[in-house]
Structure formats: structure tokens, C-alpha cells
Image (cartoon, rainbow, N blue to C red; front, side, top):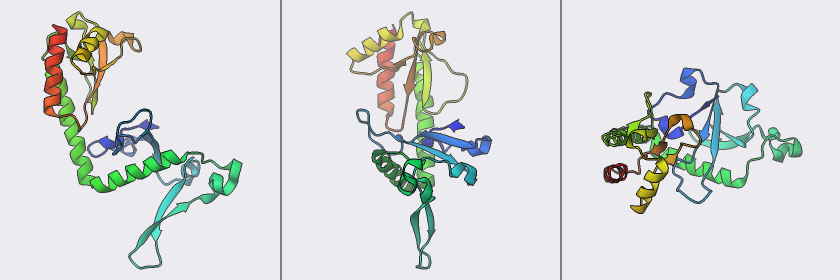
Amino acid sequence: MVYTDPISLGVLAPPAHYGGTFACGDFQPLGMHIQCGGGQGGFIATHGDMRYVAEFKDLMFGITETVREGEWGFGEVLFDRTSYGSREQGKEYTGTTTGLWAITAGVYLALMGPKGMEEIGRTILQKSQYAAREMTRIPGVRVASETPFFKEFVVNFDGTGKSVGEINAALLDRRIFGGKDLSREFPELGQSALYCVTERITQDDILTLVRALGECCS
């Protein structure tokens, strides 16, 4: 089982290419706007082995030819395994809201296409690497990762002599939300915070954050 960020798959190899039997993840990045507690859904995928496919808990739809030559349509498959076909014995129990968000994700992917997904993946990679590099120019600040990263990375502030809480409070005074404080959940990382850069973040946003961090850490 491999957890993956679907928006990364335009530039990174899919789990099946490195031995994953199942892939799962959240599809919130696929065109869903930020809101208070909503806009969430997930996906699970595997190859076509029916031993696995028949155990999926959600409604499933397949693509097939129609009576009109050259036309394709979608239809529900394995109906008997759903609550509609087997009532309490069904394996499907996902609510309507998740299904609606699945439509949103499907439309987003269709509009983006393979080229669009590649472009947005490259954009996120470039912006996150740029942000991490600029942040490490601040004395006492370093990126606590020696491995490649996509859009999230851990920044360590031990060298500044200040806690993440102090830095985040100072950033908030400047109307900036700082990174997620990891010092309690992962004390072995010291005074570290998780930062995330997506395609929506501009170069000006990054430089504004870096300038503010420099002031907060001095």
C-alpha cells in the first residue's frame, strides 16, 4: 500500500512502477477550494485483479461501448457488491458528499489532461525548491531533509535560538500564518515546522515570507 499525492503524478512515477499493489490518497488538491472542514475525499486504486477490485468499498463505474459506433459511455459495475444490490451485506457505504467531490476531481483531471498535470507538477516542484533555498539563506535556518521533496518540507529553526511558537507568533503579527509546529509531535526534530508550497503561491508570496522570517529570526 502506497500513499501518494495525486497532483504529483504528472511528474513522479506512479506507485505501480515501484512495486505498489494498492495506491491511495486524498484528492483535495484536484480543484477543490479551501473551506472549513469540507472539500475532502480520497481514492484507492489497484490493477485489474478482481480479487482486489471486488473488495473496494465504493460505487464503481466502468467505460464501455454504446449501441452507437464510436461512442463510449459510463456504467455502474459490480452492482451486487453495493448496498443498493445487497443491502446490509453491501461493501459500499460512502456518502453522497464524497461522490460529489469525486465528480469535481474527475472534471479537474479531464480539463488538465496529461500535459496540464505535468506542468502543474513541475511548477510545484520548482516553487517549493525555490522557497526552501531562499529560506535557508536566513542565518540559523536550515531545511531538515536530505531527500527530494515535492511540495512539503521541514524547516529547522534551532540555529536561530527561537522556538517555532515564537516565530509563528511574530509572523502572525505580520498577517502571515507560519508553518505547522512539529516540536511537540516530533521532538526529535527540534524546533521545526512543516511548510507547504503549491502552484497558488507566487514568487512575491515566497519573498514576502522570507523577508518576514528573517526579521522574526533576528
